[in-house]
Image (cartoon, rainbow, N blue to C red; front, side, top):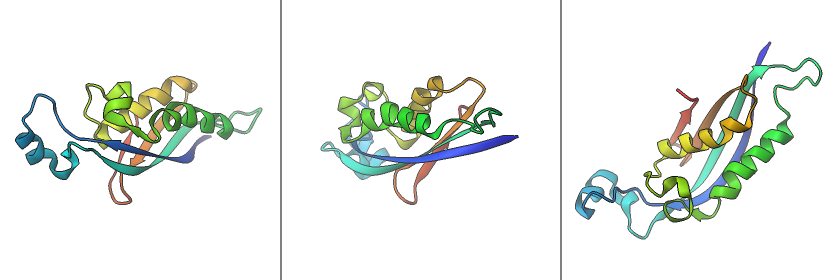
Length: 136
């Protein structure tokens, strides 16, 4: 049997959407108020879903305590109450759009899982704007 288990998490972070190689005018044209040089923040919501076979011995796809710890270490500790552009190495040269953030989160979590498990990460930037990534 293949089952998907999911865990919700959240973090608060500031960011600025802009390209260093563009003028302020072009950044404002493309990213609007999200290009504010003084940054802006979001209360991000995260759903991490792991899919795989149920272990016959434990009855788990993955121990939810293990998944909780992975999310805390790889995402919450790394991103919560941070300025993504300045304080998170992954975004030094990568625009911290929701699309890029979800891929970075996926790439931080995936190596911590058994290789037979599939992963999907859904990131809500606002209650109505969200992105998902499953490695494709």
